[in-house]
Image (tube, rainbow, N blue to C red):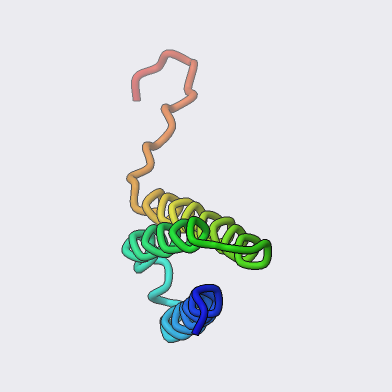
Length: 105
């Protein structure tokens, strides 16, 4: 098996494994698990960078750069969703009373 074919095979297998892992998570658990999944997305990004560094032709380089872009979008999106989730748990301060009459109640 040539080196290029092996890299493309690894890429295709990684796509299938990633899809299967993510699709098995129920939608109610997806947001709380997003922060932990960001570490996995970082590993995927590093793997895509390694594949890009070993690419021999234009097709391999194009596919690996596409993987880098998609993994980056996925990781940044995960941080955005995690930030929104954490905002839901912050205690909101009540606004100060706008009573200007000066009377003490």
